[in-house]
Image 1 (tube, rainbow over the protein chains, first blue to last red):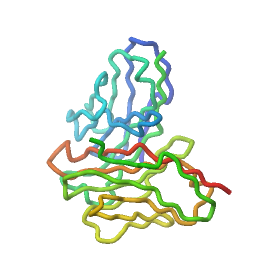
Image 2: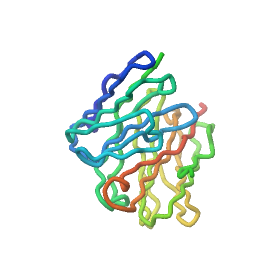
Image 3: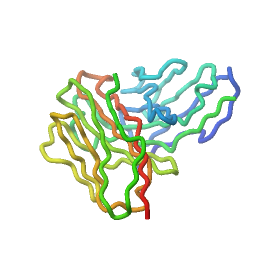
Amino acid sequence: DAGITQSPRHKVTETGTPVTLRCHQTENHRYMYWYRQDPGHGLRLIHYSYGVKDTDKGEVSDGYSVSRSKTEDFLLTLESATSSQTSVYFCAISEVGILEATRPNTEAFFGQGTRLTVV
Amino acid sequence: AQKITQTQPGMFVQEKEAVTLDCTYDTSDQSYGLFWYKQPSSGEMIFLIYQGSYDEQNATEGRYSLNFQKARKSANLVISASQLGDSAMYFCAMREGRGYGGSQGNLIFGKGTKLSVKP
Protein backbone atom coordinates (compact mmCIF):
# COMPACT_ATOMS: atom_id res chain seq x y z
CA ASP A 1 0.00 0.00 0.00
CA ALA A 2 1.13 3.53 -0.82
CA GLY A 3 2.18 5.49 2.24
CA ILE A 4 -0.46 8.17 2.56
CA THR A 5 -1.83 9.32 5.87
CA GLN A 6 -4.63 11.78 6.39
CA SER A 7 -5.25 13.48 9.69
CA PRO A 8 -7.58 13.82 11.38
CA ARG A 9 -9.83 10.99 10.17
CA HIS A 10 -12.93 12.55 11.67
CA LYS A 11 -13.66 16.11 12.75
CA VAL A 12 -16.66 18.06 13.89
CA THR A 13 -16.29 21.81 13.88
CA GLU A 14 -18.45 24.89 14.21
CA THR A 15 -19.41 27.26 11.43
CA GLY A 16 -16.94 30.09 11.07
CA THR A 17 -13.95 28.31 12.58
CA PRO A 18 -10.76 27.60 10.61
CA VAL A 19 -9.93 23.96 9.93
CA THR A 20 -6.76 22.39 8.57
CA LEU A 21 -6.55 18.89 7.18
CA ARG A 22 -3.18 17.27 6.69
CA CYS A 23 -1.99 14.80 4.09
CA HIS A 24 1.37 13.14 4.59
CA GLN A 25 3.09 10.84 2.09
CA THR A 26 6.20 8.70 2.31
CA GLU A 27 6.40 7.90 -1.44
CA ASN A 28 8.16 11.07 -2.59
CA HIS A 29 5.53 11.51 -5.32
CA ARG A 30 5.45 14.82 -7.10
CA TYR A 31 1.70 15.34 -7.38
CA MET A 32 -0.68 15.67 -4.46
CA TYR A 33 -4.41 16.31 -4.64
CA TRP A 34 -7.30 17.23 -2.39
CA TYR A 35 -10.77 16.02 -3.38
CA ARG A 36 -14.12 16.21 -1.71
CA GLN A 37 -16.72 13.50 -2.14
CA ASP A 38 -20.42 14.24 -1.87
CA PRO A 39 -23.41 12.08 -2.82
CA GLY A 40 -24.38 12.59 -6.44
CA HIS A 41 -21.19 14.48 -7.25
CA GLY A 42 -18.49 11.85 -7.20
CA LEU A 43 -15.04 13.20 -6.42
CA ARG A 44 -14.41 16.84 -7.16
CA LEU A 45 -10.96 18.34 -7.21
CA ILE A 46 -10.38 21.18 -4.76
CA HIS A 47 -6.68 21.97 -5.23
CA TYR A 48 -3.63 20.11 -6.31
CA SER A 49 0.11 20.50 -6.12
CA TYR A 50 2.76 19.65 -8.68
CA GLY A 51 5.74 20.41 -6.48
CA VAL A 52 6.87 22.20 -3.36
CA LYS A 53 5.14 25.57 -3.25
CA ASP A 54 3.50 24.85 -6.63
CA THR A 55 -0.26 24.57 -6.41
CA ASP A 56 -3.24 25.13 -8.64
CA LYS A 57 -6.99 25.38 -8.24
CA GLY A 58 -9.40 22.64 -9.05
CA GLU A 59 -13.08 22.61 -9.81
CA VAL A 60 -14.35 23.61 -6.33
CA SER A 61 -11.61 25.75 -4.80
CA ASP A 62 -13.69 28.58 -3.32
CA GLY A 63 -13.38 28.70 0.45
CA TYR A 64 -10.27 26.51 0.49
CA SER A 65 -6.57 27.19 0.49
CA VAL A 66 -3.61 24.84 0.39
CA SER A 67 0.05 24.85 1.17
CA ARG A 68 2.94 22.56 0.38
CA SER A 69 6.16 23.53 2.06
CA LYS A 70 7.64 20.03 1.90
CA THR A 71 7.32 17.24 -0.63
CA GLU A 72 5.66 14.97 1.89
CA ASP A 73 3.00 17.29 3.29
CA PHE A 74 -0.01 18.92 1.65
CA LEU A 75 -2.30 20.94 3.87
CA LEU A 76 -5.90 21.90 3.11
CA THR A 77 -7.32 24.84 5.05
CA LEU A 78 -10.91 25.93 5.34
CA GLU A 79 -10.48 29.55 6.34
CA SER A 80 -13.98 29.87 7.80
CA ALA A 81 -15.88 26.62 7.70
CA THR A 82 -19.45 26.55 6.41
CA SER A 83 -22.08 23.83 6.51
CA SER A 84 -21.71 23.36 2.74
CA GLN A 85 -18.19 22.14 3.39
CA THR A 86 -19.45 19.14 5.31
CA SER A 87 -18.04 16.32 3.24
CA VAL A 88 -15.57 13.49 3.03
CA TYR A 89 -12.16 14.76 1.98
CA PHE A 90 -9.63 12.59 0.19
CA CYS A 91 -5.98 13.22 -0.40
CA ALA A 92 -4.28 11.51 -3.32
CA ILE A 93 -0.76 11.29 -4.70
CA SER A 94 0.68 10.35 -8.05
CA GLU A 95 4.05 10.12 -9.65
CA VAL A 96 3.12 11.39 -13.07
CA GLY A 97 5.52 13.84 -14.61
CA ILE A 98 5.50 16.23 -17.50
CA LEU A 99 3.80 14.88 -20.61
CA GLU A 100 3.51 11.48 -19.02
CA ALA A 101 -0.26 11.17 -18.93
CA THR A 102 -0.06 8.11 -21.15
CA ARG A 103 2.67 6.37 -19.18
CA PRO A 104 1.52 3.31 -17.25
CA ASN A 105 1.74 3.19 -13.49
CA THR A 106 0.67 6.79 -13.13
CA GLU A 107 -2.42 6.01 -11.14
CA ALA A 108 -3.24 8.11 -8.12
CA PHE A 109 -3.16 6.51 -4.70
CA PHE A 110 -5.65 7.68 -2.13
CA GLY A 111 -5.61 8.26 1.59
CA GLN A 112 -8.26 6.83 3.87
CA GLY A 113 -10.39 9.97 3.80
CA THR A 114 -11.41 12.54 6.42
CA ARG A 115 -15.02 12.96 7.38
CA LEU A 116 -15.61 16.61 8.23
CA THR A 117 -18.86 17.83 9.74
CA VAL A 118 -19.52 21.55 10.08
CA VAL A 119 -22.33 22.33 12.51
CA ALA B 1 -18.43 21.09 -19.51
CA GLN B 2 -18.43 17.71 -17.89
CA LYS B 3 -15.41 15.78 -18.97
CA ILE B 4 -16.23 12.35 -17.58
CA THR B 5 -19.76 11.00 -17.86
CA GLN B 6 -21.02 7.90 -16.15
CA THR B 7 -24.65 7.53 -17.16
CA GLN B 8 -25.56 4.64 -14.87
CA PRO B 9 -26.12 5.78 -11.28
CA GLY B 10 -26.85 2.20 -10.24
CA MET B 11 -26.49 -1.27 -11.74
CA PHE B 12 -27.51 -4.76 -10.66
CA VAL B 13 -25.85 -7.95 -11.81
CA GLN B 14 -26.29 -11.57 -10.90
CA GLU B 15 -23.35 -13.29 -9.26
CA LYS B 16 -21.05 -15.01 -11.78
CA GLU B 17 -22.35 -12.94 -14.68
CA ALA B 18 -20.42 -10.24 -16.55
CA VAL B 19 -21.29 -6.57 -16.27
CA THR B 20 -20.28 -3.46 -18.20
CA LEU B 21 -20.03 -0.05 -16.56
CA ASP B 22 -20.16 2.84 -19.00
CA CYS B 23 -17.81 5.80 -19.17
CA THR B 24 -17.51 8.46 -21.82
CA TYR B 25 -15.03 11.30 -21.76
CA ASP B 26 -14.41 14.59 -23.44
CA THR B 27 -10.99 15.92 -24.32
CA SER B 28 -9.28 17.66 -27.17
CA ASP B 29 -5.91 16.24 -26.20
CA GLN B 30 -4.27 13.39 -28.03
CA SER B 31 -2.40 12.30 -24.92
CA TYR B 32 -4.43 11.22 -21.94
CA GLY B 33 -4.85 8.39 -19.49
CA LEU B 34 -8.02 6.72 -18.32
CA PHE B 35 -8.49 5.02 -14.96
CA TRP B 36 -11.09 3.05 -13.07
CA TYR B 37 -11.36 3.03 -9.30
CA LYS B 38 -13.49 0.98 -6.93
CA GLN B 39 -14.85 2.33 -3.67
CA PRO B 40 -16.37 -0.31 -1.38
CA SER B 41 -18.63 0.61 1.49
CA SER B 42 -15.59 0.91 3.74
CA GLY B 43 -14.68 4.07 1.83
CA GLU B 44 -11.19 3.53 0.47
CA MET B 45 -10.40 4.20 -3.18
CA ILE B 46 -8.88 1.20 -4.94
CA PHE B 47 -7.19 1.51 -8.33
CA LEU B 48 -8.40 -1.15 -10.79
CA ILE B 49 -7.15 -0.54 -14.31
CA TYR B 50 -5.46 1.97 -16.60
CA GLN B 51 -5.60 2.70 -20.33
CA GLY B 52 -3.33 5.12 -22.17
CA SER B 53 -4.66 6.95 -25.19
CA TYR B 54 -1.95 5.50 -27.40
CA ASP B 55 -2.42 1.94 -26.24
CA GLU B 56 -3.65 -0.13 -29.14
CA GLN B 57 -4.87 -3.02 -27.06
CA ASN B 58 -7.54 -2.91 -24.40
CA ALA B 59 -6.18 -3.08 -20.89
CA THR B 60 -6.88 -6.14 -18.77
CA GLU B 61 -6.25 -6.87 -15.09
CA GLY B 62 -7.57 -10.19 -13.92
CA ARG B 63 -11.38 -10.09 -14.10
CA TYR B 64 -11.33 -6.43 -15.16
CA SER B 65 -10.98 -5.26 -18.72
CA LEU B 66 -11.37 -1.87 -20.26
CA ASN B 67 -13.27 -1.62 -23.53
CA PHE B 68 -11.52 1.37 -25.08
CA GLN B 69 -13.17 2.90 -28.14
CA LYS B 70 -11.14 5.98 -28.90
CA ALA B 71 -13.24 7.33 -31.76
CA ARG B 72 -16.35 7.17 -29.59
CA LYS B 73 -14.44 8.48 -26.55
CA SER B 74 -15.64 5.68 -24.38
CA ALA B 75 -13.77 3.61 -21.80
CA ASN B 76 -16.18 1.06 -20.41
CA LEU B 77 -15.19 -1.24 -17.57
CA VAL B 78 -16.09 -4.89 -17.98
CA ILE B 79 -16.13 -7.13 -14.91
CA SER B 80 -16.31 -10.80 -15.75
CA ALA B 81 -17.72 -13.45 -13.41
CA SER B 82 -19.07 -10.98 -10.85
CA GLN B 83 -18.55 -11.73 -7.19
CA LEU B 84 -20.42 -10.47 -4.14
CA GLY B 85 -17.31 -8.53 -3.17
CA ASP B 86 -17.60 -6.51 -6.37
CA SER B 87 -20.54 -4.60 -4.89
CA ALA B 88 -19.22 -1.05 -4.64
CA MET B 89 -19.10 2.37 -6.25
CA TYR B 90 -17.02 2.53 -9.41
CA PHE B 91 -15.44 5.71 -10.69
CA CYS B 92 -14.00 6.47 -14.09
CA ALA B 93 -11.26 9.11 -14.21
CA MET B 94 -9.10 10.84 -16.80
CA ARG B 95 -5.77 12.63 -16.78
CA GLU B 96 -5.02 14.90 -19.71
CA GLY B 97 -1.56 15.28 -21.14
CA ARG B 98 -1.43 18.77 -22.57
CA GLY B 99 0.84 21.44 -21.36
CA TYR B 100 3.67 21.47 -18.89
CA GLY B 101 3.78 21.64 -15.19
CA GLY B 102 0.63 21.71 -13.15
CA SER B 103 -2.14 21.49 -15.70
CA GLN B 104 -0.88 18.18 -16.94
CA GLY B 105 -1.44 16.48 -13.64
CA ASN B 106 -5.10 17.18 -13.10
CA LEU B 107 -7.10 14.00 -12.49
CA ILE B 108 -10.83 14.33 -13.17
CA PHE B 109 -13.50 11.90 -11.95
CA GLY B 110 -16.98 10.97 -13.05
CA LYS B 111 -19.89 10.81 -10.61
CA GLY B 112 -19.70 7.07 -10.23
CA THR B 113 -21.84 3.98 -10.71
CA LYS B 114 -23.07 1.91 -7.79
CA LEU B 115 -22.86 -1.76 -8.62
CA SER B 116 -24.82 -4.30 -6.63
CA VAL B 117 -24.14 -8.00 -7.12
CA LYS B 118 -27.05 -10.28 -6.32
CA PRO B 119 -26.48 -13.84 -5.03
